[in-house]
Image 1: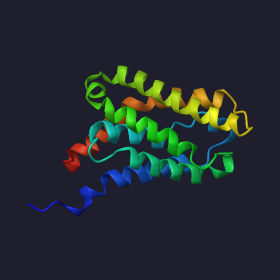
Image 2: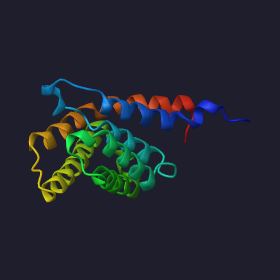
Image 3: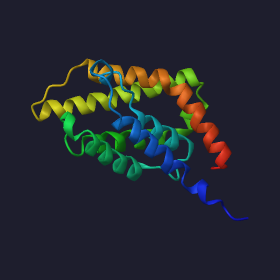
Length: 164
């Protein structure tokens, strides 16, 4: 049985959408509330298909996020490091994360993303650009709140594409 061509691009397409949502301009008041779209989609795929999405994927996506956020005082490699670490943690604990209920997953994902944001803040402080603490806390909070819906959307997409 031949695999339809669109099945192979489902994961890549979801990352492209996440990168587009990350690059989308927001009003000044909404920038601090922007969820970590790329990190959340990466976490889902690393948890669902750890043999296909790993640390290299996280590193490459992190470099793309660095390029997108070059005007927002991002240091080249800061998101690559953070997403690589997150991917390692998720892949190494994917069996445990899968069995958690969605609410508990949201709390764990929020904690992972808070650590990711803290690492980004530490990198910015190391290069002399102290970050606004709210720009570190609020994205983790909004990401945790959106996690259940993103999980359901990506799970349904994965099931329709018959990816396993």
